[in-house]
Length: 65
Image (cartoon, rainbow, N blue to C red):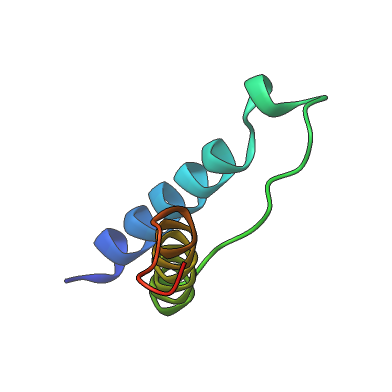
């Protein structure tokens, strides 16, 4: 890639970044909660699954009762 191509690529990248920053739909709305990593999403899903299992076990009658 020659010098001129590198400069054009940088300019295009900066222009795209500027467009990505501006989102008129979100102006005035609550801020985003932020990025949630894949590992954090997996942990949250695991916790949710275990709580559903526990709730399901509470609803079913046990042999002792």
